[in-house]
Length: 77
Image 1 (cartoon, helix red, strand yellow):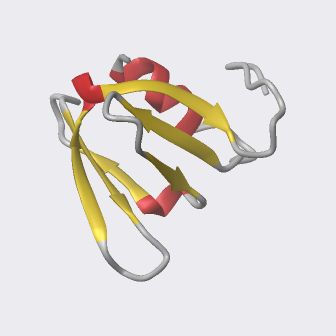
Image 2 (cartoon, rainbow, N blue to C red):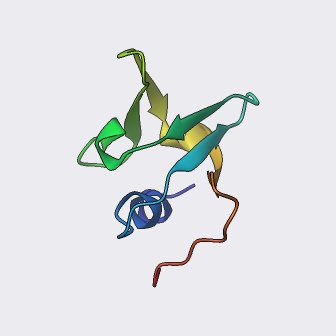
């Protein structure tokens, strides 16, 4: 996964919630654009959860991004 692919999903307007799948089989949902942040270099991301906890993830461990509503997402949406 690249930071550019993540930015496309994250910066889409209107924003659509999406799921971040990781190599170990876990996933985290990004339900609002303010729930995701990344370092300037783009190697590390932080995803906040609804319960105010958060997870710091190495972007190299992200295997895919999936729109939660099931609709395909493109950069032009």
